[in-house]
Amino acid sequence: MPVFPRLLRGTPATLARLARQLRAGELVAVPTETVYGLAANALDARACRKIFTAKGRPADDPLIVHIHSLAQLSQVAEVNAAALKLAKKFWPGPLTLVLPKKAVVPDVVSAGLPSVAVRMPSHPLFRKLLKLAGVPLAAPSANPFGYVSPTSAEHVRAGLGKKIRDILDGGPCAIGLESTIVDLRDPRRPRLLRPGAVTRVELERALGVSVKSAPTPGRARRGAQLAPGLLARHYSPRTRVTLHAQLSPSAAGRSSPREAWIFLAKPADLAGKNIFWLDARGNLRGAARRLFATLRRVDALGFDRIHVELARGEGLADAINDRLRRAAAK
Image (tube, rainbow, N blue to C red; front, side):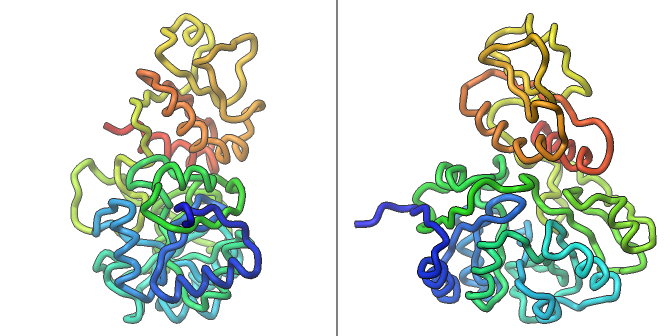
């Protein structure tokens, strides 16, 4: 008898079998360049409901639809010139576009809204699977709803356990943060809904117009979310998180051993079982890639509190700090 969930290598035979399972309405956990996703046929409402059940995800939080080719975009969404400009510039890659949806997209995918979030991923295994499946795939992060996102196959197995059968193991995620999300329902007024590896400056250069940020949501829900990852509290470890503009090595050295300290860069002359860092040199790409894995590791060690240093600067720092602020929200 096979033991579930299975961690599977991306052999041609395995990919062909997983593609058949997806077409038949089953779930498969998949690697992307951002975080691991829990995939289902995006055009099959019954299959997509299984995602919500497995994750414990509320129905008012929509899913991102993943496509293999630009031709598929017009199958699921009403395309405008701004969307095509960004797609040709940044796809395949970590950018999600929110557009008016086509009727073929089930309401369960869009949380009942007339819009749909779409992206074309760059992870080679996921792209092969998308091509073999022949259908767009809805795939939110492959973890219990609200918890720290998974950036390895083992994270998926630890979080979803026997709720799923198959995990396609594509190694650690290269970026480690969810995609940038841009609202292009009105192409004259693009809005940045969620920062990510594609920065606001890059978006503005590509579009030739200013890209405003959407207001940060309050703690109370106000109907369906326009896109995933917009709740005030999200990506959260079980341990309480306290954020700091800059961590003091001396304060960390004097602290209780029951409190963990996560520095952006490796602190000089400071070591201990409660001292951690995101990147030895404080490189933002390295920090982003290791953020969720570090939060998961520290959360599992049973500390009373986790102190985390915010990233400095703009661009990718905005994305890191967005995840940290939601993780720390009460």
